[in-house]
Image (cartoon, rainbow, N blue to C red; front, side, top):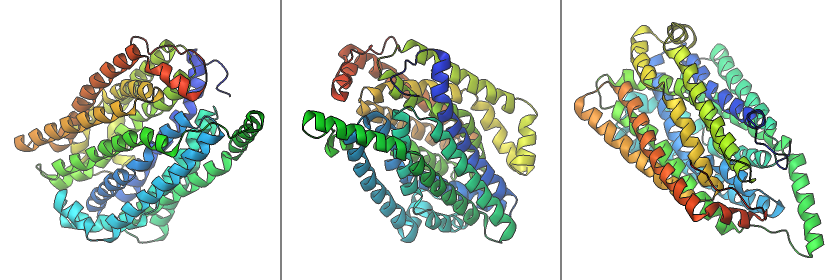
Length: 462
């Protein structure tokens, strides 16, 4: 499927988006599968809590690379841009790897985890080996997200879903195999499983993208011969200026999890809250995952001068459908069956999980609305607004968690409420910025820079 083909009906948008949504759904299953493995091993409460700390820190370290998907989708429009963004990706991966190594192998780990986050010593000690195992995790993710963006930009979204399937099979296979064949602690097994998955996916995507890359380079060479010069390309500085607010946004987004973890550690029943939170977060992630695929679809489809109303309606449908699907789990006996037989949680931990999930039913819909507005701003290259919106989100999260600590509120429920309130505040901020950008015709500036020459449709009444 080429992006020169009109994509405006709900069925056409679905065909473009579905492989991306499948990719996120498969990724969202990875955490619960590995948590279920840990739950069947010794010291499950300590190991589950430690795995939650590992994931919080690793995802925070990953923040410079996580938005390479959006940057690559938006900017990899020709051979020159592709080469510039690839060079930028390599430098970002090096930076993330250095940070991961410093945190995992130096005294900074104790300062962050035991000191700043206030994690109990037993959990902090159990988590550090997992951090060391996952030192190259961010680099592998940055590599494949860049190439996934190239595929999305060229309409080859199917390969993204296949790559994530290979990742899930590899991570689950490694985790289950190690649990059966070794006596390694749960955090070690889960961390090795995660590393195996991202490496396999990176290799798969690198192979799958080669025909697309060759086509891009061939077309660039042809244009350069016709024009008597190099293919047009954005500068490395321009890529950095576009990506930096997104990277900072990711850092702020991912800092929300350690912030919530620090709050849970200071509330009644800290160990139970810390053990239950990764399960709640994993289930929320599963039902939010369809919305995670929306920003790249918005970037690719809105930026081709297509009507925005059908795409907006599609985003709303994705959100409501995801929340209704969560109702089918959270409000029926299926939840008890899942927690007992699939997640392997003991009854006393399940009591901490259930209220949080009931409070979080609306979050998948909120996430879809959030993705719509973010996608519009990224398509217009107004990435600074996204950064400020996330900063506001983090401030609200901190205030809600602080209030919950002062009131000795139930920990998991407080975490879910903090996420909900902060999302709503950020969405209103983004909505106002989108309307402002529409009035300022920033989408026209985007079209001129990308060289399409087409007159775009404004953002409409978003």
